[in-house]
Image (tube, rainbow over all chains, first blue to last red; front, side, top):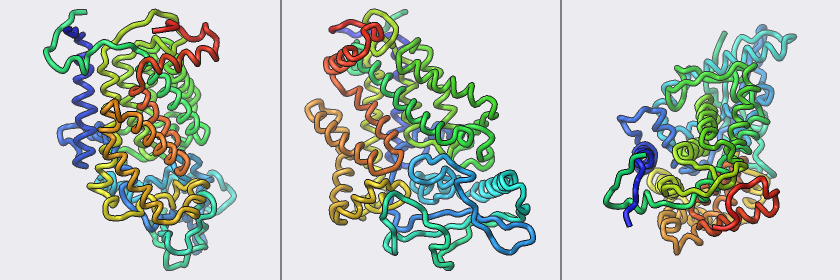
Length: 183
Length: 299
């Protein structure tokens, strides 16, 4: 029995085979983008690289602010600025900082190239928001982002769901500055 | 419409089939995305979609340079109506041929407006809605009355291939580009971090470490064997059982990944035989009013 094929079905099927199925397979197997495809399209077709590597040290990020007339950094309460938790007990800003996500997905070059610009934009936004939320407080002269690598083999809490410890929990030598932004 | 003939493989891609599988997929995908977006909305719609939240400029985007401007806060209620209205319409099959394009548009917008909160789930949903936009008939699982129709099987094939490739390339990337072959405790380590739910914490305390190595191997073998498990009808029941356990484990141990599992389960629907889907549909019809669901009582 012959099957009659409508033109719309044929072209729709070919379109999805060429622009969805083939790239899904190619990118998934090679971890490379298709050079002649637009980058946003390759981004949409990159669905394979999930949980590919072990993580013995989980990064915990903190935002710190330096008020005018002060030499002491204050640690900002992240929940005052970010509420949305897209997958996992972490804010969306974590996704911006996490190196292993970008390395696993093959975005390290684009991510590294623009990471300082992103941090500067975030610092400027945090300063503006801080001064709007705390109008009585001193204005800020700097914002910095710090990270602590929380080793799962060292004193790691497994009580309940993930809760990042306060910065004071960690020894000072474990705290690393990602970037500092002066205004 | 003018019809053309092709000589080979046409039965596989273009045989005429009942629309029940694609309609069931449409209903499930729209319902899953409705739940997912409702959760994001409840957590912080302004942060996510509007200029009130922090959004990266075009020059500093981390993944691709396609910049989509966030909404002005006063447009948020209108966008919400469009987002939830279109998804609800697609879910209940109201004017599905047209409303699915709206659902596709709002999903693309919500994915591109914030690269920090869009994940694999969004990409799979975009592909799913695109297939539906090009092919949906919207007869079963619909509030509209109409007569049963046939359609070409290619949308079902594209969705089936998508599920198989998603699993297989995920396994391949773990084995070829990740640590999974050389390090038996990748999954154990991944569960320690910020995905960890209360249940995951309890399991990590109770299950000895070597047990996690076995879980990891089973997961990897399932993903790599998924073309056989879902491709051969005789093995499909195993694919459903192992895959079901796999997705439920992910949903229970990793916070918010229940939405990822829900969308993955939507793709399982297109592997279910038509008679079983009709039986399920008729069971639902028995629960709800007969007026709400159109279509024949038997096939």
